[in-house]
Length: 120
Image (cartoon, rainbow, N blue to C red; front, side):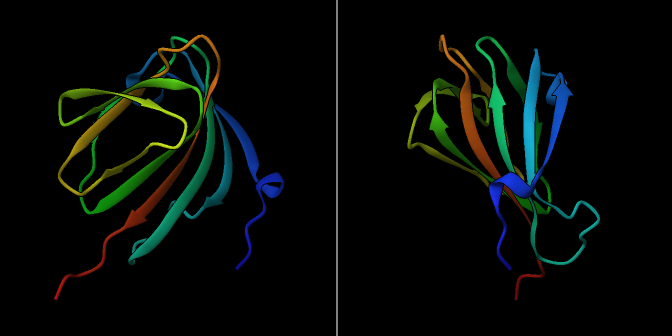
């Protein structure tokens, strides 16, 4: 399967996970009904300065954020850490995270969301 960025569906989410401001999301992959293991969605996101994604936990799924441009603060399990271009955050099942654009320019980042399968 080849997924091209321009072929996605552009959406605007207000107060994503009860955060502040708007998140612009290009849905590169959007298989939200997926129940078996594997990638459920891949998003190419942009948030403006001061906007955020509220803190939320993951259970039975994992998420990777790849910061493509801008800078901000990623909260992982209640601990704030500055992030910038090239940084990657992995949130495993049972953990929480949030993101704030603390910079003065838009922040662009990829989100890869995977459902977990049975562990043997």
